[in-house]
Every structure is written in structure tokens, then in C-alpha cells.
Amino acid sequence: MHFAVSARTDVGRMRKANEDNLFADANEHRGIFIVADGMGGHAAGEVASEMAVQTITRELADVNDLARADAPTRVSEAMRLANRTVYQRTVSEVEKLGMGTTASAMLLSDTHYIIGHVGDSRIYLSREGQLRQLTRDHSLVQEQVDAGLLTPEQARRHPQSNVITRCIGMGSEIEPDILQGNAQVGDVFLLASDGLTGMVDDRRISSLLLSKASPERIVNALIAEANNNGGIDNITAIVVKVLPENAT
Image 1 (tube, rainbow, N blue to C red):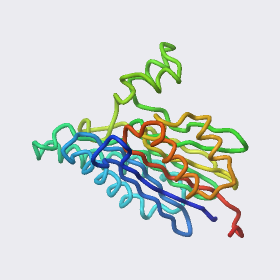
Image 2: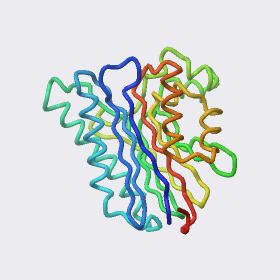
Image 3: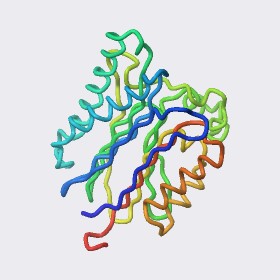
């Protein structure tokens, strides 16, 4: 197993603080990759996203065999614990009332991926020239797209595009989406906050992920493009390429 990875977060052009958090690391068995986009203001969003990333990372640190039957359950339990941890903070500290965060977490080996997802940060897979969005946004506009009331392009530009219907910290319990599938050499994964996906369309994302450029150059290009298109939110991206074992 060999991954080429780059991860970066940027405040964008309009915000004074960065409420996004990320994690990207791998051992000899698997990688753990997380993007979390906090909300709540007065530093509460930053607190929520950091708590979620730390909790999920800690809970999944010893999950090394993704083929085990209980691996998806471990991911679900980690997401639920992160939710309870953030929610309890909102209950105990009045200034943190209303804070929350998205969380999109992926365990990845050379043969499997497992995803836990809440909110509207996204995980994409580029495979054999085709880009696929693996996660489904938990958002008001996505519900309208599903109902046939909006096209995906209209949803991107909708004034309520940032209204999410599910997030970590929203209530005492949460139902994360748990997704799993096969991974293979040549796959390229992107984890991104909506500050990126709201500013850069899927065709451009696909073009960059298909390029021969290094993950670092792809991440930098994605963030630069999001900023050039307005940079209205914090921008976070993790790019992971699955390479042959002998790749350099």
C-alpha cells in the first residue's frame, strides 16, 4: 500500500477566522482522513470542528483491518461519540449554544474504503476518468435537488446553499451516513469543505484530479481557484492518490 497525500486549509478571502479543521495520516495498514467545517461564530465553530476531528481520530486509531465486519460500526460509533461530545459542550456552555460542525471521515486501505459522513462537506472518487461524489449533502438545497425542484447547478448558486439539515452537535443523537466500497490502484480521493465545492464546479475538480500533478499541486490549485472565484468561505482540501507499492 502506498498513498500520496496532501492536505491544506485556507481562511479564504471573506472570513477573518478559519472554522475548518482537518486530519490526514496513515500507518502501514490504512489511512485516516477527515474534513470538518465548523459553524457557530465567536470561535465556537472552530471549537466544534476541532473536537470532532480529535474524537473521531482517537476512536479510529486502532481500526487497521477495514475488511473486519465491525469496522463500519466503529466508524459510526466514532461519529456518534463526536456528536455527543460537541452537543454536551453546547449544553454546558451558554456561549457555545448553537455550535456544530460537518464531518466527513474516511478510512482507506489499498483495497477498501469506509466513510462516515454528516453535513455538506464532500468526498469524491476519481476512477478511470470518471468523477463520483460518494457522499450526499445533508442540506436544504440537496433535498430540493432530490425532489426535482432544483438542478445541481442551481443548488450551487442558491442563497440557502449553506443551510444544512444534519450536523454534529445539532442534537443529542445523530445518524451518520456510513458508506463503504472497494479501493484500487489509480484511485484519487478528494475530501473538501463547501468553501471549495461551492466555488469550484465538478468539471474543474475532475480535470484537476485526473491530472498527473502531485497531490500538493492539485490541492494548491483547487484552493487558488476557490479564492479566485470569490473565496467567500474557509476552504479545505485533502487529496489522496492510491499508488502501486513500488511507486516513488
